[in-house]
Image (cartoon, rainbow, N blue to C red; front, side, top):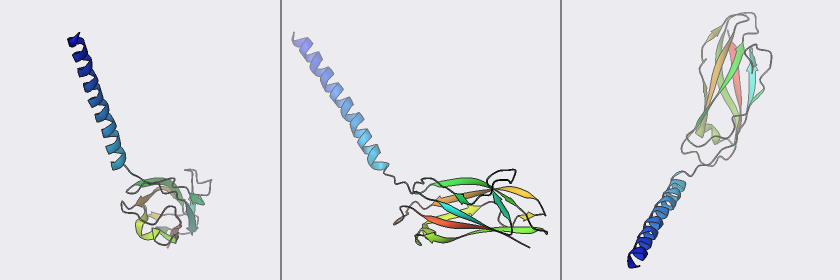
Length: 152
């Protein structure tokens, strides 16, 4: 009888230890993975070019919803740019009107078409990438204007 009770006690102790390890690991993981999502949006302004959401350049792109982004995260979005003028143009992109203003120093937007040349009627895909600093502070949501320009 004592052997049966000793085995039950041993099984109980081992089970309690395993449960404690699992719960302890889950709590530690939860503490180490504290994250905060940042809701966002962006308005696209085109100067001397057309900016579209489709490869056929038929749907004007007027805004980008970046979704929720975690500190240290980045989000790519593909857009399409078309030379709608009457001469070759050189592309550029910038941002403006950040809200709140401190977001401009902690969130950046880059693209892969800076200084690309588009001939008359030519279009190209472009990838815009929004990057949020790992140390973002004081920003829980934001908005900005993305300005795509063609000069030449």
